[in-house]
Length: 187
Ligand SMILES: Cc1cc2nc3c(=O)[nH]c(=O)nc-3n(C[C@H](O)[C@H](O)[C@H](O)COP(=O)(O)O)c2cc1C
Image 1 (cartoon, protein in one colour):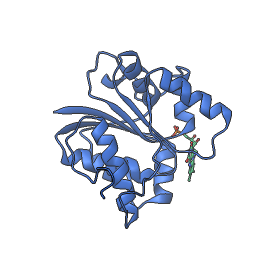
Image 2 (cartoon, protein in one colour; image 1 turned 135 degrees about the horizontal axis):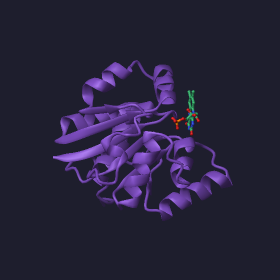
Image 3 (cartoon, protein in one colour; image 1 turned 90 degrees about the vertical axis):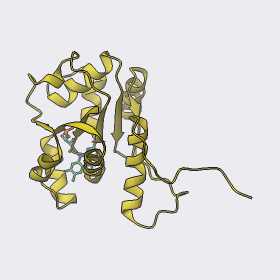
């Protein structure tokens, strides 16, 4: 069974974190979930989901202030951490080692232990400071994965767009998932 740390921060696109949580629940995984306060605010604006709903899906639920929890340590073995969606605020903290909350701390130790860290950064347009932060994170080993939709799978609904990105994340985490992959042009 895979152990996955999922953090949801206050960027637009709360549905990405929620859908990932829902899909992880259907797969064989142990889910460690952290949700920032701004995420709960943004979630209220963008969705009809609540903290209570998230808690029912996670195996372990942490407050961002819970800096003494197991996942704050590099000795906690896991199979990957995803921040979906990921704010510029949280990305910047991680890039500069400012680990004053559990999300940034868990991400920091994930990188130092050379484990997988996937960041669904959501901001546009990006200024040079954002771009250099993202480059720095990539050089530190993070996977920068903005939730940019692909249209070659002929999505019909917003759900199709969201699910496609979430499947790509699950693929990266090493889960066996079936979705419409690009198989090349046919004559
Ligand atoms: C409705 C709403 C949408 C937001 N969208 C974004 C966004 O797409 N990207 C981003 O970096 N910040 C966005 N923010 C701002 C963050 O929530 C804010 O910077 C917050 O301090 C981030 O804290 P966190 O990283 O701890 O979640 C948004 C805020 C609100 C209220």
